[in-house]
Length: 151
Image 1 (tube, rainbow, N blue to C red):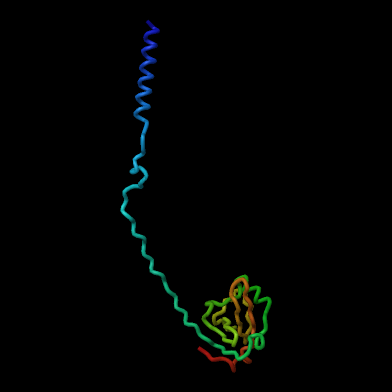
Image 2: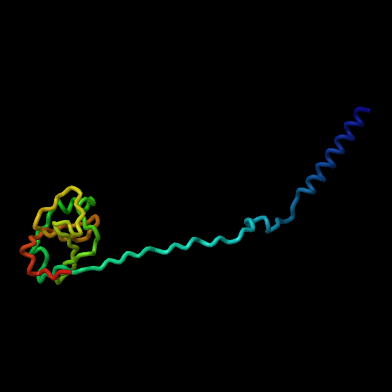
């Protein structure tokens, strides 16, 4: 009798297993399950950019190359590359030569960021490529006054 009960139990388990396998088998997936939740589209926050207008001013018109009226200062050029001797606002003051334009800062502090106080009185600083290739030329303000056109 125990064998009959065991045989009946095995038949029941096999029948239930095949029925469960039949229920779990899927012929195809439903495409709905791949979609996200039904959320309304969020509108991105509109940010109005703040525009900063800089009125560029040519302050010197040099008839010759800059190297003829100013000298390259290697120490200030190194500080400029490190960001320790720069223009406050690049492009605010300009010096024009026949070849190109240079940024200008004055020893009085106009457009000059000098946290180490390396400036000298009566000097004008010309900046070429104010980045990792920065070069600073120093000129005497009194000698350059004949080429000053002012703002």
